[in-house]
Length: 306
Length: 310
Image (cartoon, rainbow over all chains, first blue to last red; front, side):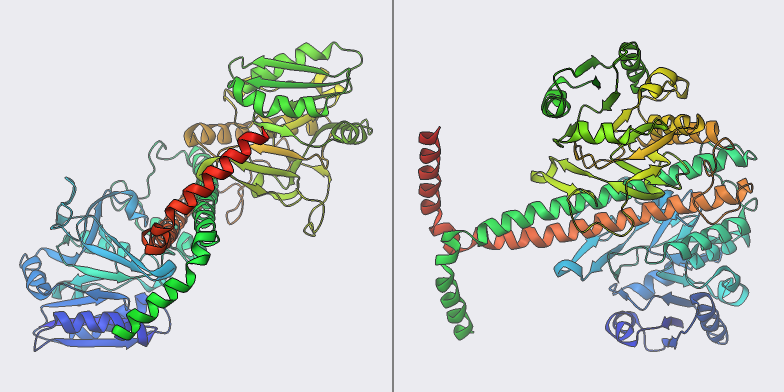
């Protein structure tokens, strides 16, 4: 039996997206636990693990964010296939190799079969590179299989993981639970893998709404795991123990990154102004204004026809 | 005599921006030193300083980037006033206090009387907070600062004769301004802002060579830490001497900044798609297409009128 669990802070978001996807993917014996969550996702997920662990016939626990919608009709079939290897501890639809910190996307992403659907600026979709292989062939580096870490918006845990591991509540409230859990799985000798599970992530274009929380979590996780995994916590171009040189470089890189961020904001504003100017010049043109009654008439006729 | 100097790598840019500004504000006895760049900006500026330092009547040396255009008719008057105090070594139009590294804008900026004019995306202007003449924010004030933005700096005769840009920093351009300001202050002189109006004709790309910028950031911090208060300290969040904690925090901050930049780019792409869709709606509408001949006729009439005026 496959169990689905979700930590819900916004019931309407859960109903609109996660619940719909679970209903689409579920089987007759599927059990769903939508738990309310008041604090940390670490704690909420641990409660779900405890609950799922009680099922003797548990085949997998699917943990998903409330804004994640499974759109894969074969989801359960693919989950079973991925977990048929008893060495597999956790499965996801986005993963990377060479992850040295919580910023796993700075490693080599090998699989990403999801679409980021946003609602700002009239809405739109940003399909990741392995979402729609019929329309756009995936790049040569796309492959499912073993990775270092997953994006935690959808994680499928094996019964072994459910019964033997827990999210580390000491790390914080939200950020880093996925990276830390993947490291736990790997440290226990199990595998973290990606599978071609198709999902839609209904998410704002704001990727980081609390930078300070993210920074703190990254520091804590690096402190926890450094030395326990090769490369983890290291930085290219830095000596192992020369912390002063490493700090100098890191502070310089951070300042450069912040300045480039300002530049990106300026470029974005400039492009918006350019398009807005073009649009305004059209809409304020004499020809557009004098033909406004015709457009209104056409609109009315179309409405009447309907 | 007020001298103006510029290190030139793009003569057309110099002619369009810096030279036009120099000519606008120069006095009959002003000297303009327009040199081809001699390697780094550090070396080029030192050469200009050598060239004017022997002038007994030197009142100031204005060093401007080739893309900086002085647009202030009262520039020379304001400059003389700023240099009246013999303790002033250096004056600029953008400055900050609590500066800890070459990213001086991460300190507390007190004055910025410039406009950033760009040509990308149809062109435009970003006005700094004291560019206009009214409604300045409460923190706006001219006076003593710790560092200036080097795109326009005016040196006192004392600074011209006693200091040099540090070519040992081995950078092409980055960090020369903070390093020079620190030299001025270490020598007991003041670094000041004044209400000069300057247009900086510059791309929206603020750092086009991040690795070189990073190297300069590190070298300036190494050179000055411990010699001037605050320099080389972390921005926040980590004890000064705990290098491991500083490294951890800064590495995390860099990761967060990169993620935030990605957010900005995604939002920009989404907004662009939205506006492009609105544009397409207009362009593909019947009313826009059937009125095309009218717009073409109107454009032709305007062109003819403009032609006859010329």
